[in-house]
Length: 586
Ligand code: DON
Image (cartoon, rainbow, N blue to C red; front, side, top):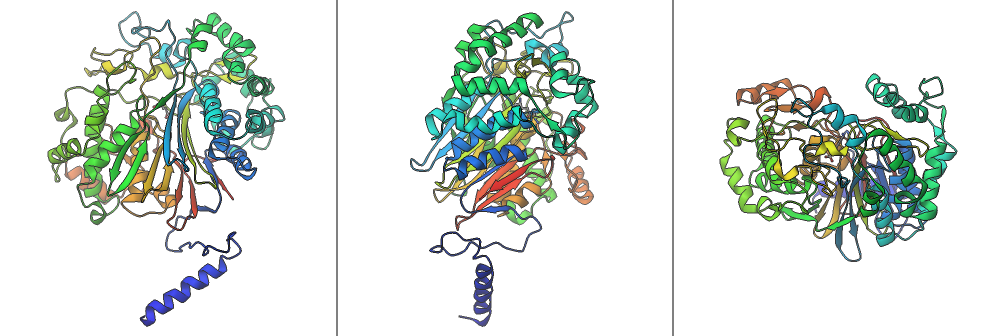
């Protein structure tokens, strides 16, 4: 053994010794943390919940500490977010939950996406002038799909959890009934002019989220939601029927009838949770397990990673112009395919195997010129509009047994349509806008929408939500996911690439600058932190490079992720991009 090796061994022993108070099982060597990065993850040994909100992460952690598993914690977190993060946490929205069961070494993909009501029709958002009526698609009672969240969370608990519904809902019921000190993050959201306009357009939402004089609650003030507490209590007592039947359903349907919405009692009764076969791929021997349609995310993550695997990206350097060029070109091809081939698999034959094959990845790679950009118009004649969406939320959970949950759910926009069910204390989604309102017809820009994603009764709108796991040597390595509308897929791609290709710890992988390309508009959206030199080099290759992200935002996504180190230590990363996110471990 050389002198240097001996010195480093001593150093490791000293670091390990200083951590001994942290180690709970003396039989195992103390886990190592390194001091070589500016981004430190949150550490834990037994379990962790990472979500957009402090109270919600702590609600999940409480279940883990009480002996519950990852699904118990996820369901507690999901219900708590509906109380403390109403921008996207919800009862009347929908989403996707991936569950990894350690003892069976198996991942289940639970689809609780909203369904189009029976009376929905293909042209329901086309106005008198023949164009899409955006107000109707975004902010009317018709924009609500039949909600899936309550059924999805309860079925997940019944199938894979260990605790009672009353136990996992207790934190949410308490937070709503007794109230909680308004967080800075929620105050910031509820005082933004855009949100005041959206919520105060509706009497029920105004009464729920603002004081009697319509002024906002300030951080630290107690915020109580008695109607929501009543609804949650009814669900805790009666289970699925507490939301889909009885007084809550009556109020939801009455709200629809009064406001011209489509959801009926029959739609609520007909709502079904689907158990889908996850999409699987590999990248340099690691296994990617991710969400299948009606999410488009999983297919495109695997498709893009198949393209990227053929290049030596590590040596190009993270976020170098050459790296960004290869990534952006790969993204263009994936988003072009998204517009044509992706929709609800119960209604449209999605060519999953072809899109995720290594051969197809290689074919795309062969088309990419490494020195210059190919214009989006030369990639395919069909295009799609960028999606208009602001809020969704993801959380990741791991328990002491090694089970994991990655869950992304949403109302679509922040606070959905802004319309609430009076007396029941919850907001309606505007997920119907995720359908292509005018498929097969050129839009205002002469571009085509996707036939695969046309509105049909009972169909689920195409989503980008991409809860994802990565496994190395058969062991869990990463659970991740993000909000961000069309940028969800590229955010998750960055998370996975940063961890598996660039060996970043999960906090570094989360914090470093992101970029995004979605085929149309034909430009690379970049976060602050992509240097001016790099942007200049990309412009030299023929790219249009924006200095802001989609929709004028300066940030892309908000990933909430958990990684497991080879030593078995849990690393959590709450995305610093949006206020309030919290990694809670023990
Ligand atoms: O399912 C989807 O893809 C969209 N409804 C997600 C919207 C969204 O992420 C907004 N969040 N930032």
